[in-house]
Length: 338
Ligand code: ADP
Ligand code: MN
Ligand code: MN
Ligand code: MN
Image (cartoon, rainbow, N blue to C red; front, top):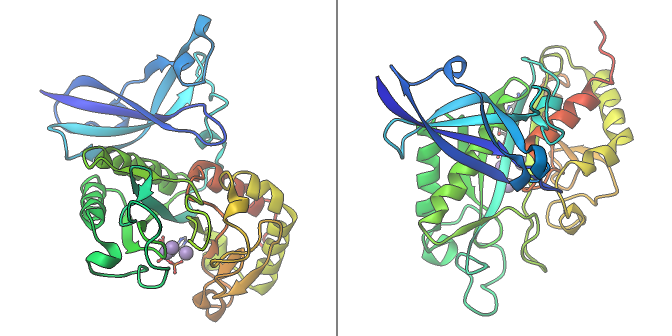
């Protein structure tokens, strides 16, 4: 037997977007625990905007577990929040996602690293040189400070945890970065994204750095942060076709407001039609068009309208559970041929 440090992680009840919360419990296991072996736990919902003081217990139900190599015998346990009777808490956006093992999601998380409320690499007053050299840049003046060290450490933490991290790049604004997470199954990529966000925020504590998830932290001619959502279903990958694709885009157009509602707060500051975005009140799609709401990869058209699509509207602060949930809800309104 060994003492395992289980970090139970969940989303609180704050709006418009939830915050990550976590606490540790020590339990004995013969070896690294499986999901089935992990017990339910509880917390004080009155401190997280999830309950009244009089009856404050909420339940934590483990839904995914990952090794935490920063701790001896450490595990990261992603949880759903349940009511005392075991039903999903109203804040539990994960529980609203349709179960679909054939749905695949790839999220591209953009964010800024901040020290004293300024992006890393910004001078103490004023601004650095204009955007241009920073995207995928190299060298102290372009991406300098400790940013790359943080980004590399975060990558290793994710890979060690078994998170399906797919890559990194320095982004268009100074101090802005991106990582990508991919997962098969309707909830997997979103689970992994929340744990990857947790690892990044926790890692930055020791550097006196905060992660800025807001979609437009620097006004003016500085890119905002998105979280492009690449998605496909088994039908889109295997059957697809132009007719189905056009019906699908019709449904995305019809429900554009419902999508924007869960694509992250303050998105009007980012979806302006500038900086590689479409305006928030318009829906369009286009092949390889980075100014479109939905970008169609060249491969999609070349393969007979089969494959995945990129919804470019979700922002960096969006809840990937709500985003995946809404996309699958809209996809489900479109009849398939078979
Ligand atoms: P870009 O910056 O050009 O938009 P990225 O390489 O940053 O592209 O991100 C592309 C994303 O698409 C990755 O997260 C990848 O996992 C995801 N992806 C690739 N194939 C599929 C697929 N069939 N279904 C869903 N997502 C996919
Ligand atoms: Mn990208
Ligand atoms: Mn990007
Ligand atoms: Mn993208």
